[in-house]
Length: 589
Image 1 (tube, rainbow, N blue to C red):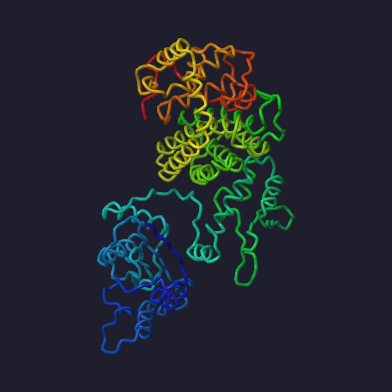
Image 2 (image 1 turned 90 degrees about the vertical axis):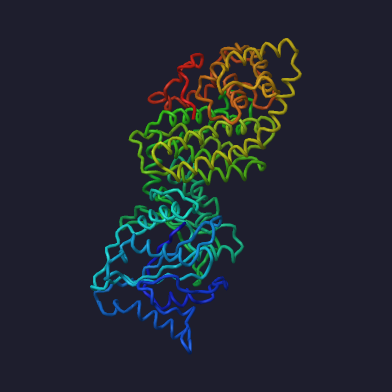
């Protein structure tokens, strides 16, 4: 149940709209379901001998405005309080009596008309659709004083959460005031008329967020905005210094044919210029172009940067699992990394990765602040992915996309647990939605390379295959983490161990290192997660068709990944207890 509150100054004009046909003839059977005294005239169902809806509507407006006129200049300029309350599309249809109860509880909750107060404000509740009502109140009490209505929106939201529970409706997640503003009804209707799939403010919010992903300087951020095709206008102080900015979509104009501008702070709380500057100052991304010598010089830049970002994402997940408030800064970096991957992803996974980035945007904001914010590593990873350009979606590019997305699933789940521990219901829900989109993207990206690995695993000599399966069974003890060795699920894992051994690694030591990196309880498929960890640790190609190179060190991580993750792991990332001791394993989630 969603309340939306607005204020205005025209009681009669709002009633004309509520009892009219609507903008698209969507208003049906407009009538009162409640009023301040239960006897207010109803223009929709006037039972007088000679009913005239216009006359009855004028009488109702005059009755509502009576105390406003009596108060004279003491009345507020915007004396109309307007609240629309809508149920979820999946909810049952409420009766008029139930909607009357909802209206009375809301005007009581916001202190407009407390129960038992004869001087409460006058109000009516109009219903012209099955799924919502409109509450109109005039904000002058019977004693001609203004009602005390501090935090009316929060109070209305809290009362709706209680009503949902008591009436058996879908229970929405309580917010904390850090969410971005949703489009207005007028914006949504305009988007439908103009053939847009979303309101302009949503398009602009995503474009600004993507332009900020991995940006090293303020100038680079604004350059990216203009390159994305947005109109940008700076707001300057008398000294000439920029203190804000606004953006507009080309072609999005008002009735006077002027561009419709949105300030960054209107698009989202963290997109104002001061907060963007703070992010850039606290976590200045590395402005150098990544060296071709990182890891494998023969890999393409998109594949190389995705492989490097995977290790950094693992470190972010460890910080989130540590349950420290300092991990709040990493959520912002993870959001930028998702934006970078979505912008450069292959066509097959672009839709799901874009949906994941949009969902996680809500998870990046809360009232928790990190005192020692350091997101240089993860923001540099996002920058590297963007500078490397789009991945082709096949060969090594497709394999490293699957490798990175597999890790990002675990990061999203870790973010959900981090938020849940702090009571951030909306952010935790957004994290789980992100994980669902990432899982869908992973299934698309990993289908080809994983099938090739399974084929290679089945083609191994029987003796070699049994040796690697024994290694897998020994490393994964009798817990929920154990691989299903009775099926073909371990084929890809066995093939990876065989390739690692061929490249000069110790399969047992390497597998244990992959298991000890962090928990595996939340993995959708433990075998897949271990495959990608092993291939990254051993510097094996993410796509099995690529050639394998013998590394210099048997179980070391790629140099670039280690360098970039150093400022993440040094202060706060705890080492995971040895997996060989069941007592040291983390509790199952």
